[in-house]
Image (cartoon, rainbow, N blue to C red; front, side, top):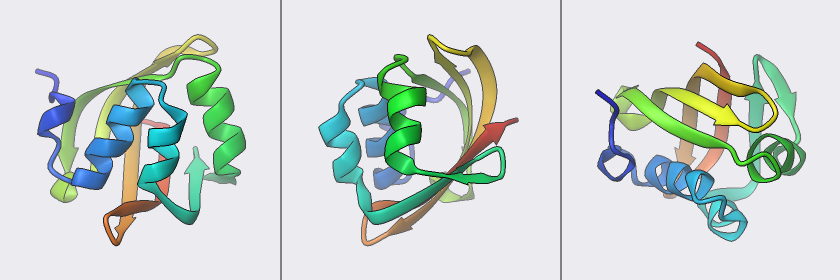
Amino acid sequence: MPVPVDQLSDPAVRAFVTALNANDRAAFQAVLTPGATMSDDGSDRDVADWTEREVFSSNGHMDIDKESDGGLSLIADYRNDTWGAMRTAWRFEVQDGKVSRFETGQA
């Protein structure tokens, strides 16, 4: 049973997923701390470049299967126009109510 986005436990993670699924660049940027970092399959990536390619220009979307670690870890079915659908794991670090780092990769 998927977890509805509006029921995700951590407010920053909830805002991150909501903005990503809405393809809302401004809301997505607003949920990140200045200098936020990320990695994809264990390799650090440039957040702006990666999100443009993997999320915004390719219609990225997350369907959450489960959350753990107080909402800071997610298992999701992620899809975009480039890669299709894949099962992914996401881990978040939150600082002052915003996402300071996120890590994603195949689950």
